[in-house]
Image 1 (cartoon, rainbow, N blue to C red):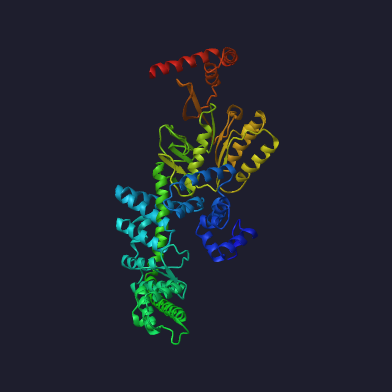
Image 2: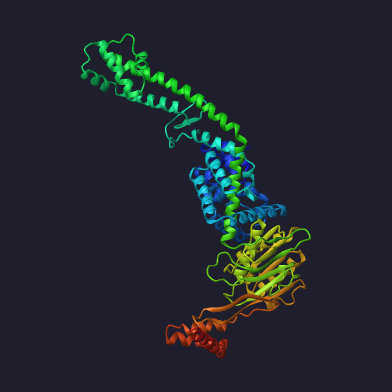
Length: 601
């Protein structure tokens, strides 16, 4: 396959991958979602991730209808990737894409659920062993031997169901025999795992594989050391007082035999037949001896390598299965860890005649810290029962309420729920139902007031409504990009188009009263600010009230400004505003805040 057939791989990227990895290895890296292989080849991390996402889920990427939807998607996968138990599992998580088929989403949810159940059934010691095994696998570079060792550890712990089930299908005996052989045959030429010599077929047999081979290598090393210091050996023997050439030759043989642990006869067998002088005798003897030992090492290494390869090949199917099972189980366990860390739940997936909307009970925004009020909300058809009970038939909602009241946060929460479900991942809620959407359009509030922004916004959010697919619209304060009167007209048109196209959507706005009358399939919901806390922070009930317009309540903001004024002059200015919004309401707000502080104390 040509590298340029992959999305995002142009001529320059293709040339770099061919030069650094080779075509076959580059294709393998792309197909296996190996982000690190591409980045180490010089491809920027962001570009590598985009290439792999398209290569492994191009159809699913079309679900992300806007830049803001893609931003939420990136944030979700970055968060999930933080819980990866191996490097490659993290790579696979970061290139996940929405799954077009509901069956695929259900299958991934099954896998994660099974991994969570297996994990929950382990005691603390077993969990530590599992994580240590994956850490060792990572530190060893994910080699076949590391995979087999990890597989044996996981089997020993008893992980043999759900995503770990393929481990139970491997032959434990074959893997146990193979792990030793894999530990002594290595094609890596970095030389970091002990002394080794390359055999004729390219494998390297490491130290410890065979005692006879190790002894031969030690003798060869000693002979080569003596050969490089032949002059020193000559002087040492001369100083020992050899009286003639015959005595000298035998003294050399004795010395070399002692240094190499060879027999005297082995050394004499390599001795020079007709040396010119003593120096020639020493150098020729040592050179011949080293050459002979080199041949013996090569012959023995070839025999040992063949035996090791035979052991490995006998277990080849089990080794391959172990490698795949370890990677798949690490992936599933990583997602299970992510789900556990944020108390995520399996959503009910719509599709066909099932629910077509987004409904969540006690939903939580994944990126908010601290004590967050969960929210129950729904748009479109659903069958969830909750208190408060979200209406089940309106396909469009207009969400209103106070500034800083959590409207945008709710919109982002719904986007998170929809995208996680689209990828077959659990969602941040107590219960949830999510329909089958072809496109998720999420548009954040952008404080730019010009025709160019209006045009680009309309070009990004309207086309998904024009097709035949199912669309989820999540649009925040559309009026921020044009004058309020015209914004109300455009927003009313969008609401009508959403209903006409059988889409579902939530539109956040302060112009709800200007949209009347709404289509029958739409409703207005409101979030209400209830006053100030003793610390003068806005006190909000983030749970929307269904069928009710929320109020902006500027008197609460003005009350805080009056209370926090830095001097008398500044306070007078804010009190003028208080008179405009209702001085009595401002004073009541401050009185309530003080009363709450006294009650709390």
